[in-house]
Length: 406
Image 1 (cartoon, one colour):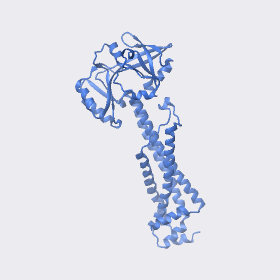
Image 2 (spheres, rainbow, N blue to C red):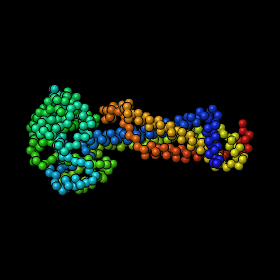
Image 3 (tube, rainbow, N blue to C red):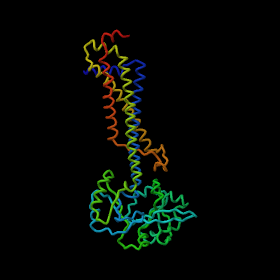
Image 4 (cartoon, rainbow, N blue to C red):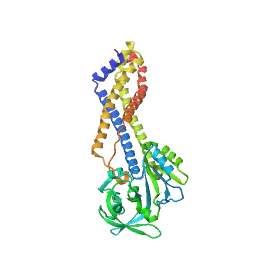
């Protein structure tokens, strides 16, 4: 039988000292709350980053390819996608899909209101999966009817509210050229992405409208949007795509297109690290305090064990075993509390956010087993490593004085 483990178990289970019990419970509560906060912090930050990234990616893709020129406006210079470049895009295993697009500045006029907008032209190859998830009214453009598709338009909830429009309404859009070109459209759907830069900046319509207005050739396009399979590899894949393009084309990633949003998301990682460090410190302080009080209250026992021949190391193990037991209880309760609250938020979305400030209507949760296991292991290792320092106090205890101490 392990002598140190047996004594530690008796201390942990049979202890009848009221004051030490209170301190032990406070220490367990501290570890529990610290772990729960760390689990929720990482889950919320990762959920938040994933949701925001998906919003921007879903509407604008991961990488955009356009003509290489000095044109910095939203209206891109047309080009023809050559067969070699298209073959490379098709055969690239990292690319999930791609489609042509074009944009053109326009002015919306309805109900005595005027709004500047960018008309984003798409064709039947456009992937509607993401937009369908965010349509709050109506449906998508029906490209099977080429005549009707020329007049159909999707607008954001933001734009609809500004112009007091709803699904089924007609209005006039003026395209900006040397002379304003009016076109009549019908709203077939209203979506709500939740990212103001996107919602107030774009509407979705038929690509052929831009071709006709600009007198483009049949095979000319304004650009190509593509989505990659693994967003974590965005930078190297974007660089690879750029290197393979002919000299007249360029590409830029969504991070380059919306640097403010992705810089802000990067700063969230700093906040997470600060929270984790603070919570670890709280847990460690609670356990150090509890261990010191247990050692002071067990001075007589330490003296007796030393008089029976127990070494300082052996007695240190007793108290470290006891501390590990308390940490284990705290971790168990912390996992239950943190994961439980996270699952509750996932299913109910009880905790709301201001969408105008955070782009989301609720606090998102994204659990990863690796994160939870890692936090548990780090907490155990850090706490037990730090607890070695106060346990050295045992070596200072004199057996004779400890036995006589009352």
